[in-house]
Amino acid sequence: MTIARLSDLADSAACPRLVVKVGSSLLVGADGVRRQWLEGLVAEISVAKARGQEVIVVSSGAIALGAARLGLDKGGRGSLADAQAAAAVGQIALSGLWADLLSAHGITAAQLLLTLEDLEDRRRYLNATATLTRLLDAGAVPIINENDSVATQEIRFGDNDRLAARVAQAAQASAVLLLSDVDGLFDRNPAAAGATLLPEVRGVSAEIHAMAGSGSSSGMGSGGMTSKLQAAEIAERAGIALVIASGLHDAPIERVTSQGIGTLFLSRRKDAGRKAWLGGRLRLKGALVVDAGAARALGKGSSLLAAGIVQVEGEFQRGDAVAVRSENGTTLAHGLAEYDALECAQLMGHQSAQHAAILGYAPRSAVVHRDQMVLL
Image 1 (cartoon, rainbow, N blue to C red):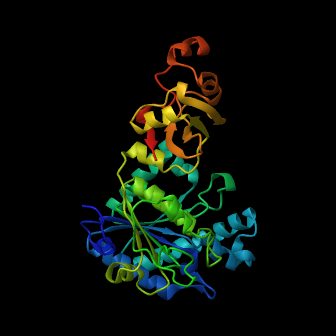
Image 2: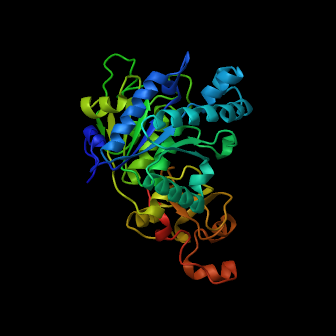
Image 3: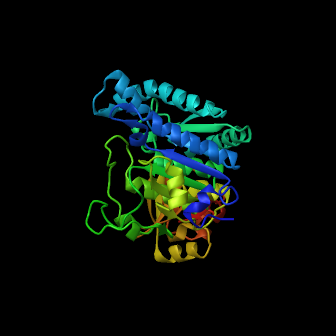
């Protein structure tokens, strides 16, 4: 059973496992923690669990909370060092807050702090999956945040929207609900006259991306509509529905499911586990640019052969994840390279029969095998 409408998020049959992302501006206001609002959200989580749903929370707010306690300006985002320090202080307060409020409903909270590498490295991704599954089986509600106290600019998600989508993928969730400070995706800037809320999106296209502005309207978080659309792309390839909705109102989940206010991104397909992981990757080590013939062959399910490669970008080793792009810059696929970058450069444009002489050893069947590749 798949999710076809917003009300399905409250149906335990259609949505047995739900990821709820809470943005910084919802959790922390000008006067500190919005405790009354958060109590209402926790009550909704309790109701969801009572009707048989499993819930995972991806919660922002650590940096904002820590910055307030340390007296840091710019909400703790003035520098990487400020953000890391603020996160270290704020995460204690954030996890304690969730634990206290959930405990009032007889629910055990669990804390997981993740970095980009935890979900980009295949082994660590599987470890995270196993931990989440065990916690949910035990009846706990995992509270997840990016580990901002140690993540650097090069190894961080940078926003919890995409983190939520990747967590949903790892946990094999049915849907992701991104609670933010907007009602959903509008066809233009929501402040513009005549702006219309889109109730449903079937596939994130270039046209849909053009509707997104950049940045966080609250100024507190790090995500904007662009990051939410990127999260929707990750989710839809893994067969997961994603909803963008406002959390500015009391009982925000009920507002989505009962009043139908929000934007539902329908899942497009359900890739197998390894391919869903590949398709959702955010950091790639390089790229292989292919000619039109190779692009057509990939579309028919073929592996990527060296003869169709016209350019090699980046420095990567065998087994690293790379993008496969057309000559016009369109990303066609993600895959695991069977050769390192130097070998790919030596082989590109050459037929398979020539590979042994070029390499000096027996070649592999493809540069990127179709079993280790996902089309985008």
